[in-house]
Image 1 (cartoon, one colour):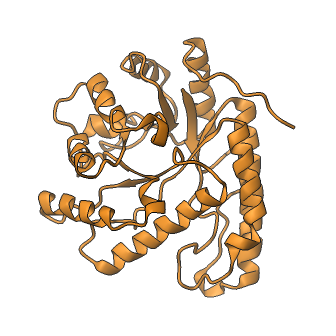
Image 2 (cartoon, rainbow, N blue to C red):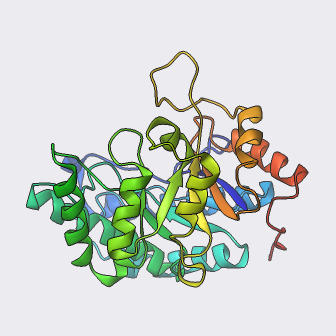
Image 3 (cartoon, helix red, strand yellow):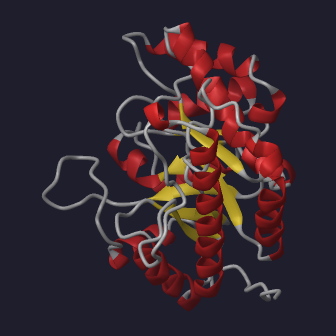
Length: 304
């Protein structure tokens, strides 16, 4: 089992998603931004290894305007060595990597332009995983999309679009159950049609479900992952912030709730992404719990 957090490390003095205004675009600005973002990403990954955190969601903004038509700079060639070095480090240290494209990625949109821009964004992010030389256990995580007043048509549009995606995207794509529109049951329908794995979100399942107990839901989602092709199931973990609207993620790990959640795994191997505001601070506490319970993956020797 691996534990991680998404995108931002609040203990380090750098960001891996530095950008600039579209109106200020230039090849020079882009090159400087990508170089700095990759250096920060390397620092974050090294920090995570020291802390025993071997699951990380990379920021979508590594390459500013990565899928925008304005970006004609050959960043894939210019930074090939840097991406390859990061990928080698990731593999040597047993780190698992994912991306979660922004909310504008909607494959079942009624607007064909939005669908095409969504595909372009998935191709951009998938290409970074390819440049790193990572296998298909490194995933691109999205939601089914919008409801548009007709659940059946919305699901069918997603399935139809998925079938037309480039292979380099399909082999990495996973869908997540959400907290308002598409439940685990809906995601299972998509999986049955096209075989896409389901990235399970415990908190979303608590907000939107059809009565499936947590242990059963975990096993239903885990069964959609092919061990050799996809690896063990990835999942997102959080809990409700007290006093806030339903679905608001907690600001820090509630250890008692996390321990209670772990009892539902019942031997199931999963890699857990903490969607909690204080990022690596909660991840360090979570890894301590996993070590205490002997649930954490064996440490990998750091190669200098």
